[in-house]
Length: 98
Image (cartoon, rainbow, N blue to C red; front, side, top):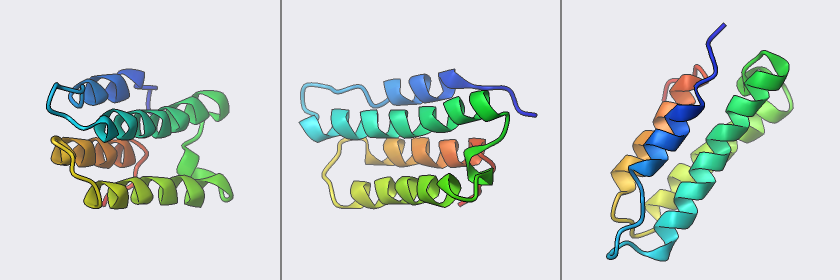
């Protein structure tokens, strides 16, 4: 069993910290990514299994992550590549390679 790694979300999100020239959207998107990733981490802590193993929640959780990536395509973000890398890392942490 993989250990919980709550710091992966916090440290990656800190890379997206808003700067003066960053749109307000960046902060909100960063929070959505962080909360989405922490949901998976909390799920693992509670059920001792990955969220993707849940037949009901797993596909929806994955759809949210893919939706976040789509959201990045439609927004002007200073750190869009970093945000996308964060989403990919969270997927990888859950055992899904994109």
